[in-house]
Image (cartoon, rainbow, N blue to C red; front, side, top):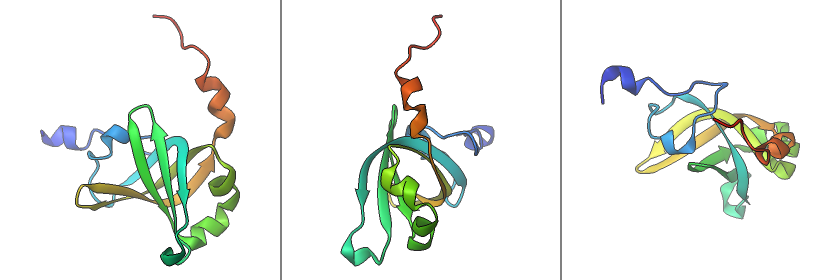
Length: 119
């Protein structure tokens, strides 16, 4: 990949499509948005919550540490559509976004059902 293409990915506050999560380098600050498919809070995870978000291109795995969960509890529990900004982490082929900020954007769901402008 040419050097210029390596750095050509959407930066926050623009959301990165999930299919492009392989483009930013480890530790990059990214924003993802999507429908909440799964919320997991395993008893063995010491208060960590794992979210799975889906957009039209794929899924994103989000890790929410307990302290951040306390700050964004309402969005994590009740949000159906979330925008998450965080740090990209890779473990082999698995990519996670370690959440820093979580926003409930469920109010935008109605706009998704509306047809776009005709071309």
